Length: 282
Image (cartoon, rainbow, N blue to C red):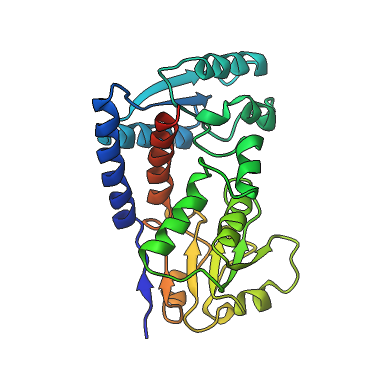
């Protein structure tokens, strides 16, 4: 039996409707949520991502501030801009678009963001709160995945979840979110031995390797009725694809996210949600 397509657009629209209602309520009390984006350099893909975030904010009544600075900006200058944003009471969230130029220390830049305005959930403070189960602002893609699983009524408790990613953006925060939902969690990465065997035992697979030359998730690697969530974005011959061979996998899995149209819309939707939360508790 063919599995179910886990589209992210319908879930993202649900989140946006919730955000709009809460934004309207906040504005009625005199507070308009505001997100500042910081883009260093002129990378076309990054510029598109930032524009899409501004557009989504506008649709939900969230104001935006756009900081575009040259590639050769010094580390100290960028830190100064972030400090100014931290001290601006009219701005509730700040997002520094990644990747940063090679001459900048990404970890130091992230650490300069006020945890109260860290809508990406990446500061050491917020990462620590996540480990303790007390985080209010959580990385957008992982919390978006949890929201998708709940929307499609997919049980997490007691299930074996395998994450093929160990990044601070996805794999590490997702590990803790799944653990908090009482899953048994295994993290795989480029040094993992016999990844096919590990995947074959998983009830839920979240894959984000992003290297189609080295890894593709195929039907023979999953068990019957597994749930497959594909976070990777690869461009092959002008076409966007993920880690999973979607047409093949969906013949065996119970649920599969497509690429594009799966997790991507949820990342933006949860950014809106985080900006709202930051404004509510400012």
